Image (cartoon, rainbow, N blue to C red):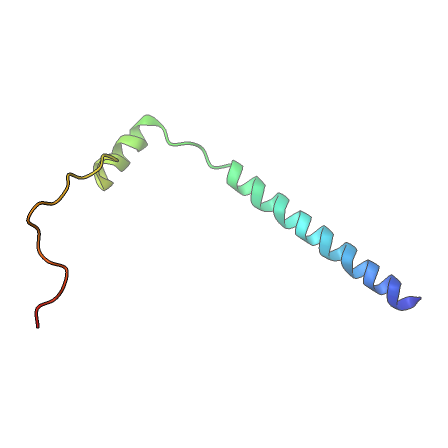
Length: 66
């Protein structure tokens, strides 16, 4: 009987700790504000725009020539 109680307590502790972890992680991710227009413009200027690059014509071969 004691073994069953011990297993039940361990399962309850594991469930409570995993629920607390989920709540803490969700609280941290919802606190990040979205980028404003100035930050978005600075990011696009630094990293480049999200537009696709044009296809490469007559580019260098990928295979090395030994």
